[in-house]
Length: 360
Image 1 (tube, rainbow, N blue to C red):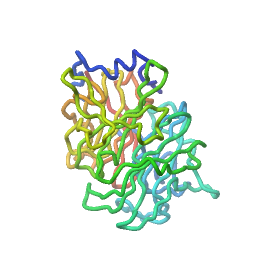
Image 2: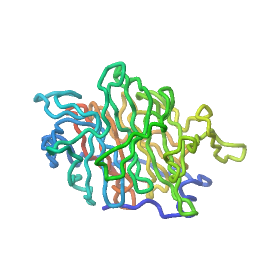
Image 3: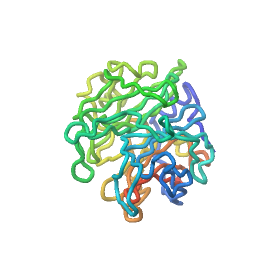
């Protein structure tokens, strides 16, 4: 079933932002299960009908009762048994949408954003030139002010495993349900920033508005996590983003408009992070790929922490080539005790639907 986010206004903000007297509650994770394959020829969605035979990622944007699944480098035809990215009809990013409210048996797509002949179309074109712009990879998105906002990274070059160089990260906007996208050229973060890949979450305020928090990491999978936020009403204004810069003597969070003053909230080797509020634990949970180990989960008392030590969610030993564990607060059961998430597997280079149970 779909689970709404935690309340509204003062009560929700206090619960999400006040870490005083909180304790970490997560004791263990159990019941890990691969529920379904979401993409590819072998999936129930049979996405090969849209020329999506291989793809990855699958971060989600919740827009009222519709969920948008955003995928990365996508290929139309692939050789039997092919491992990893590659194939014909390469698109840097594609989008599926669904109104399926029952995650227990996988997610059924209502369709994909397509071109005039019915094939999944590239949302944000890229040059596809190595050491220039190899691709534009969507890292996450958010529904704000009635529009879809897609945060992406412009990749200059894929390097050694887990390492790549970015030109910058940016944002695109759609006002027609993902059919067409406009690049917001003024809204970019530099290649050396900690905001090349982000995970956003809206926190309601008492005045009826919302602040959007973004946990960010550099390009690649070997940097830590930083944090920024913006008033939802000002999401398109670069100067309105502020960066977590630590805490003052009373323990209150300090925010700066200077990105150079941004501070780490998690010091680890973090790849493809996802952060949501979990009502069962009454705390934040963060999932990410820890290279060489697998998908791990941390519990946070506030968006800036403190964050717990890692708990193993999906071991790499059981699912080789795993990455991209993306959650959606709408897809939980038992008041958030059971979480669902997408997970990419390098072989067969498609996106799968997983579930696990949190125990406190």
